[in-house]
Amino acid sequence: MLKEFRDFLLRGNLVEVAVALVLALALTALVTSFVEDLITPLIAAIFGQPDFSGLTFEINDSVFRYGEFLNALIAFVLIGAVLFFFVVKPVNALLERRKRGEAPTTRECPECLSEVPVGARRCAFCTAAVGASS
Image (tube, rainbow, N blue to C red; front, side, top):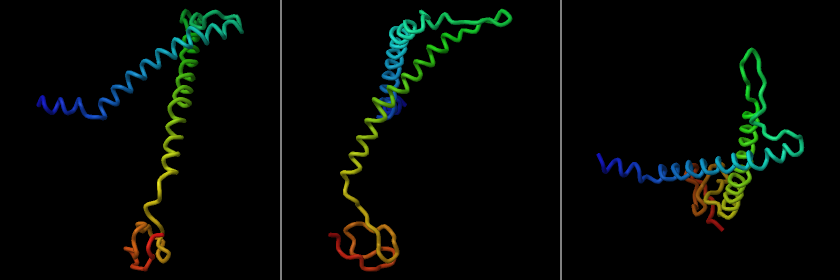
């Protein structure tokens, strides 16, 4: 039972997910600090509001803190932008570059239009001669 537990913990997927979670938490803390310490004061310098977290309104003695929501919204948008521009776009570009460099492994049979391996001389589906690959 302990061996199974050790194998479970050392499985590649679990370790990768744990590392990703820790990095995500660190990134969230970094972006939250960026929003609270740099972006919010910058917006405050332009519009005159020193801190969004203090923005509230009341209805029937209920306090609505929409300033906290604005801070969270700005942090969410910035986290999304950071992930998109620094993770998604570079990975997509890398995958596209890798895909362009690969030689095709199949070709189309001229008779039945099925996919045939590049090195095949005959189609496995219709047995038509497809010729040697060039």
